[in-house]
Image (cartoon, rainbow, N blue to C red; front, top):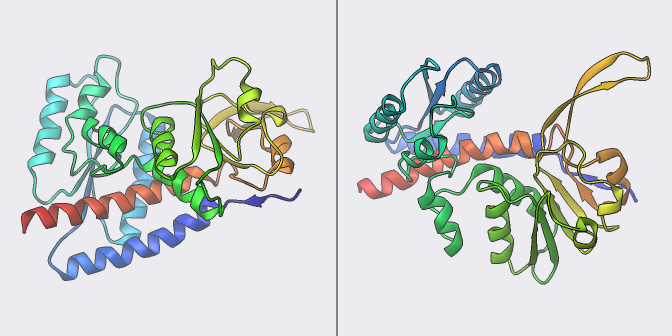
Length: 294
């Protein structure tokens, strides 16, 4: 079987074009769009992600503000910064880079973000409203997965879906999205006993456990659609005997892909689409705040 490779980078480019049009329309109506990102400490990955955000915001016309603070900032001082951004009418979206230093309670900090400015969809108000299918803003990684499922041509109604990994911003929201589409959903995780017995029933398999190549050929039903949320850095020895670092997913792509109707690559699948969804959420946040102001 030759699978369809779900090209998240290409889909992300299409979404950015649509976002740019929406930003222009909002500006024409007197509404600016501004994303404020808070970065605590000097984590290289966080700084690299912030740089990528800044470039992509510039491409679509979103103003970008990076608020940097040292790693020894107190929790109260960080919460005060979030309060200021929540109250700033020129800021329409707020996000907090992870990870945070150990002395900061990440959940309390994320919960402090105004639900209408919470462009990552991590505030409990947004997570909880997923239960009713009506979040103010949904988690952007889960939205990226949902978009990939849609573009694969998979129709969820009446089909079997298995979600491996039940994190608050990926696995659980995706489970809720699929239930809302009338799929029959099995929620699994890395400790599920006899995991292949569950995953081999899946017409759709979504994996996000954070373990390199956790899902192998034995886990996958022929003809399934497989969405790999994992992004893992591993060191492997190449054919020339030289060790090199690679980015791989939670699915063993080379072994699983021949069984699939459609599959996401890593890198190039969920990752770039997640950033595009962050931009879309930022526009959606600005639009909803504008409606409230009127």
